[in-house]
Length: 312
Image 1 (cartoon, rainbow, N blue to C red):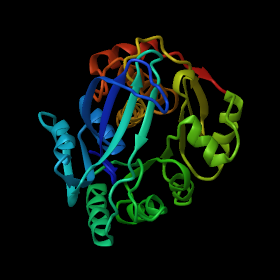
Image 2 (cartoon, rainbow, N blue to C red):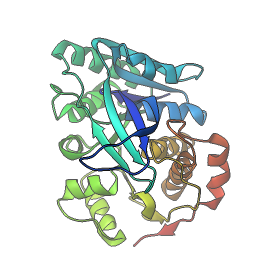
Image 3 (cartoon, rainbow, N blue to C red):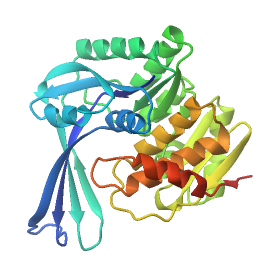
């Protein structure tokens, strides 16, 4: 079993306009709503490639049904602490003329201390049943910035066999590192925020990752968008250039990469093979529209096509 925490689920409302006009009139050509949240995406992507998975977190009323609908007909479990407020809405504006997406994200409703304690208790319960716990995504107002650090410590005490994968940004990532999670997966921008400098070359990313290994992180994976992906552990580091696949949507690609890497770890694979699975999963994800995430068949076909280069 692999568990993923989602403290701040959302509904992604995507609208398509012909050509986005900043400060002017924009007429919507198409619109859709999808339940989302990084923990939701990771858990569902794991289910799509055959792993037992559960998403634990909070869930609002009303439009929360849009999120819950994504679990219908899947083998993925959901264990929620109900909140008497709607789920936050994130607006994504797709400019059809350029393919660029502008995102406007709501912060979410404040999290009461008793609700947070209930979610943390559920998280520890699932950690005792799981080999990996994924702590990922934004947190709502009222949630301590060190929540992922606190949870990593508590998981280590309550479920020492459960490894933590941390995928967060900003202070949540910086503070979370103090608890030394087993694995982290920042994207290139998040790594820049963490290190306080530009990561404009593979050498820079490699140097930052090796510093993190020295701090006690066992595996550091970095998603680099259209430039590829990187992974380092004590036995080496590898880079995978981007795969040539048709891109329909990048939504959930990073979460799919996490799912692919965790699947590889569950299979007992290490190093370059973990990166191989992550890149194949992310590459299959960008070929799908909306929140469909991984195309399991394409994911398996792409595995042999992933190019891996040793770094350093």
